[in-house]
Image (cartoon, rainbow, N blue to C red; front, side):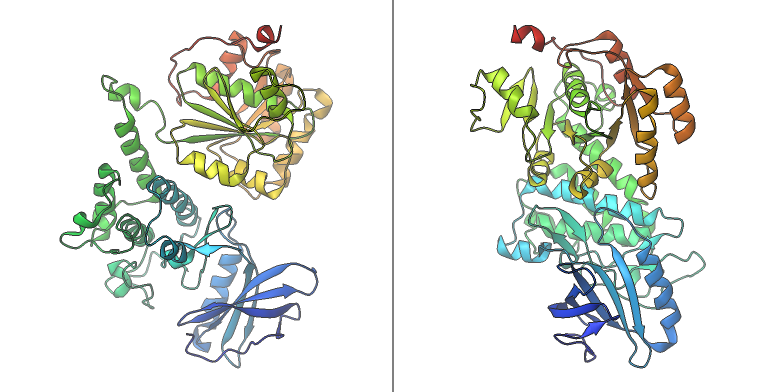
Length: 497
């Protein structure tokens, strides 16, 4: 419980806007409440109340401003900050996330989380840590543990509780305040040095050990190997061991380095006998996500997603093409044609196959998460032209985001408008595809966006069928990412006849 008495109770109003409904949780330093927004009826927020020493209020204020500046799909938005100097109470207003903590999830499953979910979870955590650690002023989370990881009903992961996060200050030898959770905090958090990115990586190692021992261990001690679940990939044990080294200089030095090691290890294990490691290393390890988003209706997002999927499949990759829209009709019509189903009579299975590509129609985000833990090398998301929050988040977190816009001269501005509306998000990974665009339109858009990944897509009437001109464009788009082992062709238009 929070050591200090709270100023809030049911019906209390914070900042003349947020009415307290109930307590969500409490710890030694803070309480979290659910609050309703008096200006936006029906909107709920989480309000975190903490007690700060008046002497360090300036530091607390600076840290709050830092937290408000963060923007990542797996972090709750922090939208407001209030302070009450007489009592030392400070309040952060943030997204209310419905769900269950990873700690509670583990208790509900008797310490068991499916093995295939552990590495995807680790990669998601690393994605957030990489975002925090590579900011202009790096942010160190310092309290990574199961209680601070939230799983939504759709099995989406969110990192919560920034109560002790801090900006890294290179001139300090050690932290002035020693904070963290015993068992998950790095040794330097107890006074031996300043915390930095490697401290969060230690906590990630503790979290992984906790998960693969069924919640029994989070610190590397003699004999702990005997408690690691039998089905857990043994090649990942050295990675966890290195994350948990006592001295920071002996650990991985960045989240990016850990991501690379996880993917290399997975690729090594999946390499077939007789396949040289030089060839295996040409592919990205694990499942890679390509998200195709149209800027407007009729821009050709679905057509492009199909063409990309079969291009990847012809190069001997396992591919899932996912229609991420519960009311879309395109894949249902395609399934009728492929399986000979009478028009209007839906199949009981949402999955069907066309020449090695697994199509998933009318799919939810929870299904996507389960597919990420499977054997697909590529998942292609057809997001249509919808820019709702869910599909936009999937686009932003994809490995290869593809924006499809009209190649018509008078419609090119649709793409620049989309880029401007999302300018607060990193766009260096984005690829822009313009069906039937002229070379002049491509040149001008590259100049306006200051981005070289703009491609004109040639006329391609049958996206299932191989086309030399289209292959040349996609070869350039995926250069250095895939091998070039070709498979047989599939003529969808011919099959219709």
